[in-house]
Image (cartoon, rainbow, N blue to C red; front, side, top):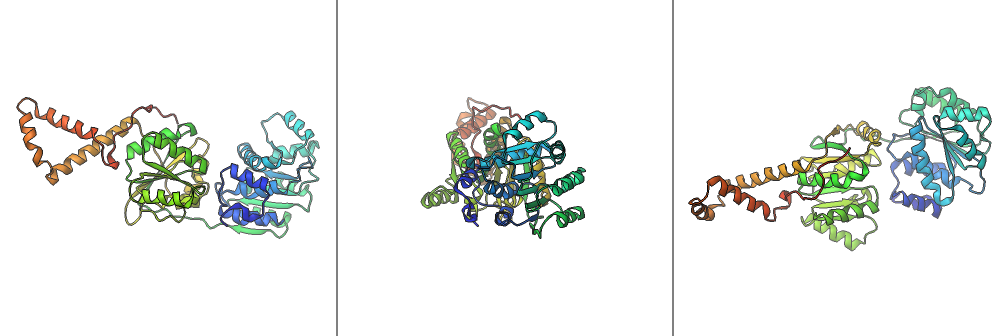
Length: 445
């Protein structure tokens, strides 16, 4: 399926999906959404980072009756951090429909939760212990719950929540839909599914182990969002790629990154699904012909493109799925060449990076963002390479007389240094441009 319209979703939910920047369903979404929309129970083996929150969040908000201000769906999550993350994403998905959602977790004042529950909500995202606490206090009415999601069920078991999970499952309406998502399927999970689920459909996603090739050097920089653009420019200045592809998660971000690169003097263009076919073909011709050095694209726009092997792939936004990571970095290190894949990771995205490493078998090492000094050092190294190449090729013969004449009044080292300064000031080949001034040398991580 190429987009979300094929699921028969309402326009309000489709707008929520579009606002989050999702362009096409991931494998888990493609398989889970139709089943949950049909009212089937689901047991899915899926890792964090595969898009599973939207896989259950989209059917959840679609099935809510917004006219009834009672809890109609519950999502259980193992930690406060995950509960907040899930709540935020599902809230965005359901905002256009008017779906209200309450996160319930320990460490938050319970009186605030009580006020919101009395006012009424459509759905709850909770950690098991705090939800059981509300159930025992009789401060939450779960008699209208028609959908239950257990997110990262194996982690909840590992954290000792099995009794709480069983208590919740046993005290919800039996005619509900139950969806269980787990990275692994140990025996306790299977037993739980047999006891509390109705003929669940089993989804096992194939894991793309060892699909990254050893010729690709894979690194990551820990960069806060506000510093990503500067980090990207530092990478381009220090690495001097022959050609680079920069991947962004949304069309809006593609436009923004491409425009900022152009404003700083880079030969960059964007590529995404909102562009006409004529413009896309023009951009691709420029990239293939070397007139465009940096192609900024979404995953969808880059899929199936016939482009030459690029020297560098830069994940401006961390991929939403391990398989996307494999597809992205597969653009480099083709035909026996080496390549480099660099991923920008925010402070709260390290867990997602670990998922990519675990599921792809990749070794992604941490490096520091290049400094202006690094870029200048690279410039000097490339200038030296060009000088040595010129000496070996003998392309300096006609200039010998000028040098000999200058040596009557100047030191030989001074003449050579002045010649290099002149060469550096001239427009250089695209792989040997001087560093661009005007950006701070400090990068906060």
